[in-house]
Length: 407
Image (cartoon, rainbow, N blue to C red):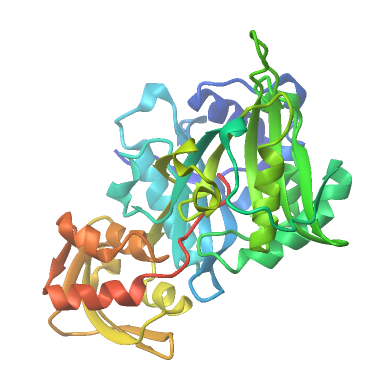
């Protein structure tokens, strides 16, 4: 069954928020009962709902992002967000109705791709999304951490939120184009997401702390984190890292040295580290840094030529490939990608493909990882071995993609 889906009006925001929170099994916090922040954070013309009569039975929305892609370039991405279905309407086509509407809307914005963080990993591949970035959850027993070298690391200062924000904004912009997968941050995102710190989001932890690393008088990196006090026979407090942004290797090491030497807080965790974060290589005993891999950003390619021409490539070459797309058949077809001096041209062709895969696989390799060869070994890429290897070398990147925040 297909359900009516449309953008909501401002008058419908209170009902939308109530259904959104109920869909995630929560209530609207007491200190956030009005809709002012909601209406500022979410673009009302991109916030949509599925309806059963006058009642909202499904919620969704899109952020207007610029996604960093290989080659220090950016491309427009519809950030799929706040997707819920009411428990009374599960398995009745509500999500499909909303995804039909949403992906048409994103394509209509001339955004070649949509991206999301999946609450359940089994849901979105059927709509053509593939895992494009992974994250590392790192845990460490800080007193056991020692660094291989003691270099001149500069200083680290704690700033209050008002003083930290302009410094963080400048540092973030200095780093954003250096790593595929990072997102643009509007003033609204900074105000209502990055710096937003109500008590109900702290989960028995402290307010956010803002540590800034300096080289002389120049800020070169920052870390944001929370603290959770705990005492048994000995202090067992925890540092929960939210974000680390460093413009130099020295800043990265200085921030980690600071985070692992805070008295009374021997446990340090970071839930969203890049998979190539160099911390384990900086310490004497890498096993002391426990790491667990999880998926993070998923991508859905809506316009194959526009998406592939937006990024740059570290190896020139030509690849002719077929994309299968059962959910949006207009995207399916055979394409030829020609890369010269790192710049691509991509077009549909009437030719025999060298390599074949589903559209979710293209979303997975778009930012440079995972490797096409591993997907071929898993049966998700088909083609002559040499053609697969050539395309693998064209798509891979030296810097691992990373998405720094959930949206």
